[in-house]
Length: 340
Image 1: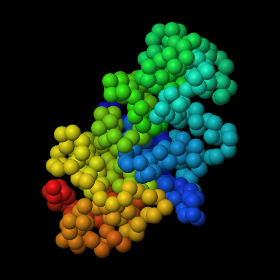
Image 2: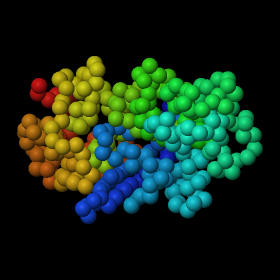
Image 3: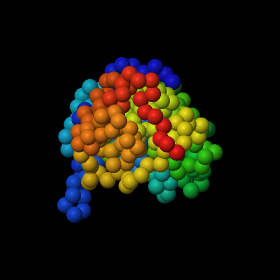
Image 4: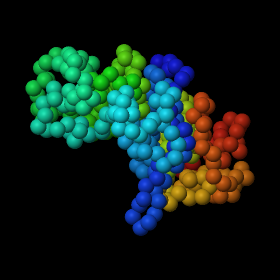
């Protein structure tokens, strides 16, 4: 992993995004997030479906407007005028999960990659910039692909075209939403290696949205684990995934191959519902530590059920939002493995 600079290139502060849901309910999709992305850094946003990671990524891109809080790029808060959003989306580019859906089947590869240049009114050296972007994305010689249509490409090649479409604008940040989820296992490694190479060669920063902790382990410098709209644990990816502290993170890590957690931890209860955020720790209805009585023994069970935890401050190297972990701070093993 490369050493990232200290100043964040992309930042979220006290970010909240809320939506009206059917039945007059309010969905707290992002419910208080602080996040820093530094130049040359790859940050993984991880968690189950419904945890808020995709909404957070869309807000960082300027595709969703926060209900509260700010998104800043290079220290300047994002404004939501058409001109400001256009400039932001040039510097912060999206790579979608499904390359087939992202590409117009009636457009050639050349037109697909050139589209961003045309939208942003960049007329000079279009052919050279398209060729360079395709080459950087691993499609060589690029001219061979100019007149090719998406259906004539493999899934991995289509994803490379999508990445080239982002690179053509020379962005500083890429936000990749499940970038290999739709690809065969045989080509996933190639796309991940490409993202790492782009980081090393171009100094790109990236936010990678994923439910796959194994992917995060292979590609990220840092990881932020989300649950019900908040980051519950973050820090250097090796530290978090080798020695997870939050009960939710431990459950996710426990099912990885060669996990050091012991027996897999099966989460009980219902998956996250952003319209029904519980009081206290938002994970407590599914928490095996609370269910097993360990939180009671540590004197924090009442806090788990009734006392909200503060929003994590992204300045710290390693952070956990958990009453039980805080109560046992300083002990050798903050959380015991779940009983099988």
